[in-house]
Length: 254
Image 1 (cartoon, one colour):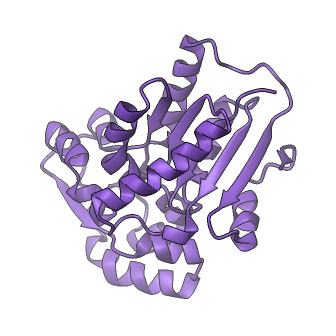
Image 2 (cartoon, helix red, strand yellow; image 1 turned 90 degrees about the horizontal axis):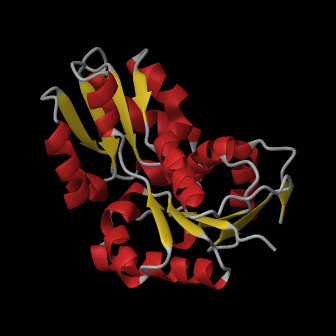
């Protein structure tokens, strides 16, 4: 039996990361953990976030996961340092806001970083921001947005975006999607802001994960792969949305 890769988020937003991983690692088994019971993480205390993450990590370790992907920017910012120290033999790969990508590809363009309050206030993000600051950047803590996306309330989402994003229309060319939920609403953001360039860290995370697995000779050559979905509230609605977003008819479900 091959070892799976564990991926977790505070909800189903991390499916946007899983999609990128599957593109370059199609032969792996995956276990995705959606912590709907404790969603959202963005406004929680650091200690609470660390405890929630560690509980999920323990589940993955019991299931013999060869790598654990933290597909939540807030969890990555608050918990990955602790987890790597506590479990030094475990491979952890953590998502982070793609602000460096702006520096590399569109440095001189006005940029809006949208993220949870927890991510924007975190030491990890601030080190990244100050290192690559183009001095044309707006930081926008999107309080409650991940929760609205998680609920799938389109009317509430439109109201939120018009109220929060309308003032940036014509001001920014780049949008850094600092939460894994946000790529799910790129079309809705474009309706408010017009044509902008989106940046998120999922593709780079996927490449880094493949490099780590290759380095440790842990890549799977099996042509059959399985994806298991676990939700902390056992939500069948979340599970259905998850697989609809993945849109992988040829993948086996568990």
